[in-house]
Length: 446
Image (cartoon, rainbow, N blue to C red; front, side):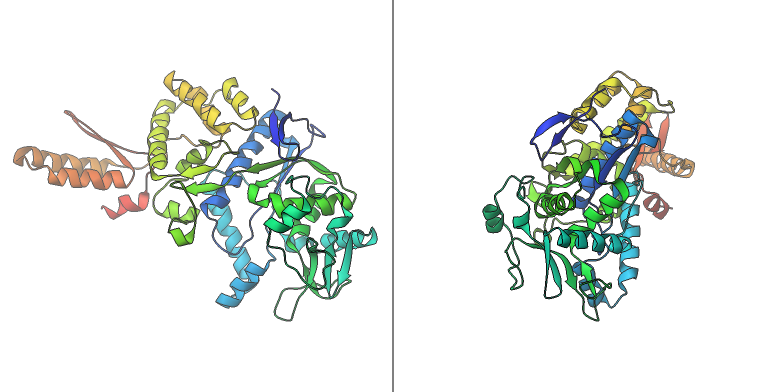
């Protein structure tokens, strides 16, 4: 089945034709590791995880290479170290661990390679030296800057003129810049800042050069797909293209960008009190499957609105789907689901097809479709609920005699809060774990 993808650079959907079907290559910009990933950080991870799964399904798992980097040298990290008094390496190691745990809870597969920028300093220095030699970069006061005017196609990705970009961006106007739009490839480091030896003195790389160097080293001078959030389109991706193309690399063929995330119809912001991390939601008892389901319910090129209502609806839907799947083995992934995903990664369309499978009672097809989009419809952990069933039966029997059901209602509410589904009938009560099951809350009821 032909995959079509919207290419930001050409502004149209195109049939995807990999450079080498035996080696399909994708690079996605990863996090700067100084703090917990917020919900917006998770959206590109989920989006491109689904694309990774689709490519593996289409071309074979052994024929797809997915690279997502960690930026572990950055002024935000330096500021965090200064603020906390902790070592930079300790902060970045911890934050990378957090990120992988949180994204794993959302069902994201780990990429084939997850390079850290600090492991590729030599490659960055070599690329910068090449840009200087070709007249596309220059040294000034310990800095090396890319000369934007040396690349005639600058602005093609974002579709804006240089004048528009200057007007719309916070451009650092430094006396050593030849042009306000020139951007830093290398900058000097003082004694208290991480630094590496270079032809221009002890220093550290600018942000943009990192991805160009790592993508070239791991995927070659030309590869298939480059992805990220649309907030990276300018200046980060625009600058990546400029420095890579001027280095003689054809670079990415298809550029994909996901839209941003809102919370209850508003931009997520600490000042509005609607800012939260993935870990915050997980700690509140929102399962990773629910977070993923809500994200997949909106097409990646549309703004996604996280709401409590959507989360509650997702819990119910996943619970029903899990019941339909039961102990069924996964069948083949239904062609209708693959077709939806192959149409510019239409995850909302794929979920609509899954509703049809659920309506038809096709547990095997539904399970295969869920696995395709990274949703786990298994019944969850095996939990012995007999103790609580016995307690519930005792409390209920007492209530039937006294006609006071307050204790029954309280126990039922506590069990539901722990993610345990309560099914009462004239014959008794049956308990089972649901998609929102929280073992810690259940343990607290003992």
